[in-house]
Length: 487
Ligand code: AMP
Image (cartoon, rainbow, N blue to C red; front, top):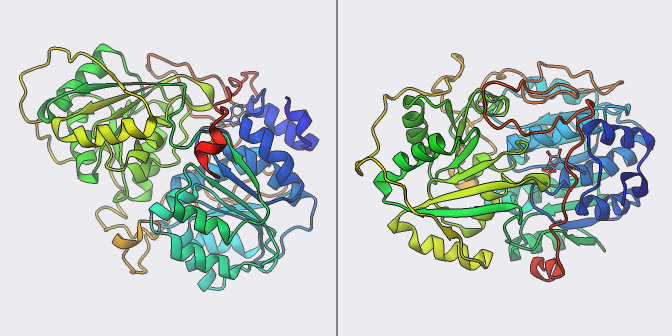
């Protein structure tokens, strides 16, 4: 199967070629023709399967065939749970739509709203948004959904986990009944299913990854280790195994900060990313990690959701998650798009219960590694309280108002920070390449983070227009996928 067999226009095939994709992924093979036909789609697909292109490519083609968005109008709405995912989807929309005369914008909370209002005024063909900020903008009369043609709910399960159900229902109530609906979710809980019931109609149901099964390409291993020795073990592994780029998960924001400080003190370029960080700090941390100036990114589950870092070789569970499904999401950060990856868990005696739940969920026993000889177990050193990624002066310590944070913790304050360095309301028109704003959150087509900065394993093939073909997807589906996913 080739991209040319899917019914895509020459402009989109060219965009795909420029990305270096050679073979469509299973979700793309199944979803693209259906979306092009105008059908609703409900897909069980986790990040890393190529799902973004699976909905973006046909969506752009359908929009390109219709009347352009007029003032304040939105023709396609993509809802995502996190700002990072919103920015990444916007990046894909920009890249795939580079040859189409369509306008797009991305809006999310935690940054100034005015540039977003300005971006929406002229109308946009594609709007990528997190729910809270979208409702803010709608309530200010900035946009209208009267001509909305397509709705995409991306990572629906995570949206529900994050408490967005009421916002989603409110948004659904604002949309015209006649529209195409595309829903993507890594897992299908009863709640997701209930949401789907009122949303999609006679949908093409697709399942490309068995429910709750860790990516086959990820090698999983664990160390049973005293809590007090986890930091020493992590440092040992980073050094002795030459981990060039490692994403480390902690259970709490506080734990993420503490670990980041200790690693930074040990001379390892590290940043922490979690919901309490301002958007500027999050963007800088992600960029630094992507371009290799930071070797370690310490993240909590919610902050890491949707991070698309190409060919990330190592993921570490410094703490096991309480919710076993999060383990699957975490290790899905590596081994993406068919590449191989390693997931290492540091499991303390107090985490035996979580480990049992995870192994039950994934249906296999994770390989136990022998603990190397470590410095005598003592509590992790307390590093000086210095942020590893400083906040911009304008927002330092201002208690960021994050409308996209989980509901229970959400503050209803309306104070928003001044726009952190760009990344909001990027809009492109004409060539599709002309973003307004400084684009800090969105990489423009053809622009890629600098590499070759001393990282030891620079394995990522070039992505754009430079002849570097991407690894073709390996199918992760199997005969039981549909049954397992219960879509
Ligand atoms: P997603 O599941 O949308 O997060 O995509 C995961 C990664 O796969 C992204 O970095 C995409 O650029 C990449 N990707 C999407 N489609 C393909 C393809 N057909 N071949 C190779 N890589 C792809």
